[in-house]
Length: 374
Ligand code: NAD
Image (cartoon, rainbow, N blue to C red; front, side):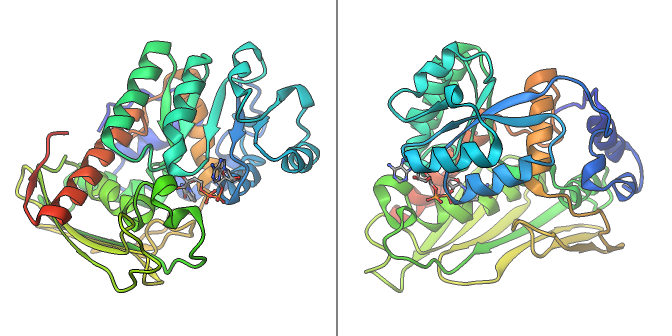
């Protein structure tokens, strides 16, 4: 966990959550109170790249942001640009396609590009954004393997721009309350985490089932929440992984596209995580953390919310705040004010998850335990 050095309204609020015995502060705020209604400070001006399903959700949520706004669009489909321009009042000069978006470097209306394209394209897209001198926000998984992830981290460091990963759960109030309880020792020494993440995938022709665009299967798409969650819930970096794969449909889930993987992580303290990643079960969205003196349970744990949870002390009552609204306001603070989030969302954080994903696939292929160095 990084040390708190928050300066603005929400950061102070979150910082108090780290020190107060009960996180009641969130209870007093609705989503519109994240920043004072009169907020007049600097705004992060974001171009959205890849105007698909998730970008639509992000764009709608950003209408409630106080510190971040959409000022540009990048798409290969002219009709989408036309519709989105009208909907979000974006000037034509701030719209690009995949051939010419390098020209954002000369556009003073754009501070950052949010890459929301299929997984295998993140590598090229983020590197080109960095080379254009703009900050990059990249959807999960950050890339399709650790080598590509490292290239992206290096390219952003070289260009002196920030690289952030769309880990929206890192800002979610109930999740942060469990992190606070664990950090302050209220659960005792952590012994066990269980992360169950899955849904039944539909259309067999979608890019998520195409290894070339997805980089894998359920693990890349939904299992990554259990990997990432194990790390921020246990509060340590795993040192080994074992994994087992099973496939019931070889037609839908082709070579290299995993349907179901069960994996285990070992942590330096001796804590263990047991996780399930699948494209073959609905309603699988549960985190369970157990320490010597307490437990925390989130179900649903990573869906769009509301997240629900309870601990040995009772129900979690922090309010639901639209995840992408909170994420983009917080990311504005990270980019503009150099704020440090309670749970990191930078490129190195994304890279750690990719190293674990590589090791899980290796463990499935070999049957052997893989040592990890994150
Ligand atoms: P989607 O298929 O709905 O949208 C993808 C967009 O990329 C489309 O607009 C498509 O036109 C565009 N695109 C550009 N080049 C393409 C190409 N060569 N092939 C196919 N499409 C191309 O997918 P989505 O659900 O919006 O997912 C996009 C990214 O967002 C993925 O990395 C995914 O993991 C991530 N995502 C994150 C969350 C979250 O909660 N953080 C949720 C959903 C998706």
